[in-house]
View (cartoon, helix red, strand yellow):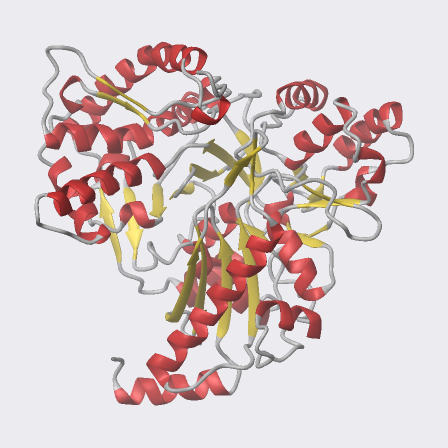
Length: 544
């Protein structure tokens, strides 16, 4: 329980509507975080969900979106009541964030035309390649414009009906406020953004409009895309309909201001105070990605990298890997089942902690073991599909410690390949901040990540709160944007005096990971052969 004086203060903050709410729709969890005037979390709520592979498309239904949001919000309110004895009916501000990219297309009547296509789909190869060549700017498979253009190339029946497209965060924000807008960071994963204007790149919009004119006369990018807004601008207010969507009990009051909806990359940057040049962050969840804020544009296009912006509009190089911690979670669940089978049941946190700590005892190179966490395709390594693999040779050292070190190394393998490209471009990196549940066990994944990227890795007190806390901070920034730029606000008001645990790269770990990565790169041929030879169960014929 919180101390009595603090609790009394927080009750007043909550009942007066000064607490700020952040909600993020992640790949496996929808999470809400309520913060007070000092930006510290005071209550949380969450809802677990999972994407579905339907007719070959990774998707979430919109019904699942709203059921999940309502459950998450209800759990947050319950947590507030349990802690402080009150139930909030209003907030100082609200922020919405979600996994970036993907494709949500609506007609003129605001009806969804095709099921939501998430970032995880890799069916946009031709569109991404053509746009990258035309723009001279890497357009990854998961970007919204790649999904849109691929639908046009394929003459999909819904294309003539498209009136607007958006991201998941943009969709939720629109339904809550009535405004079709995006934060500039989320917008930069829909279409390239010019960091000078902090808006869609006008030259590239013109080139894209020429393509549209050839194939679909009457369509224009500007008409299809949401308005892009930098952090600090009010992006609408909660409507009565929006309040009812979030809280069907009717207790939540309309009129609350919302900040621009952001992507999980942007909230990760905010949540780790890495919006300044020469800083970066790694977000580890179902996917894993690194963001490095640049001092200058790179010399050439690299397929391993794409460029987005901070929520303030500054240029960021992004190494995005489709596959993150899901395979680690599957192995942890298996070991948990084994513990139960031998009569020593353990909770998920206990299992993770034991396995991660075992990894510290493993050989620096993983003992000759290899692990691939490829549940889905991985564009950085040129794979359209994934097959999780664990591989060893007869002379490998198969121990629990080596197995777990290898699994964690595997979660960082593709990321390390992308980071090597940045190193070859002489991009300077003073510090990398890490967040996400992978880093909850102190000093394990953090240490191995430092070895993988060859830079110090810092983890702060909000590492496990992640993007929901980050977007709550962006919502709180609405009240200070007239006075301070975002970087100064974070340094002076949010992270001043924040406790950080910093791990420097260990020389033995660096050498060991380098040896592991060499084998990992060579072993990608095994992964490729597996995707060609082994079908998913749902793809097999009944007679198979």
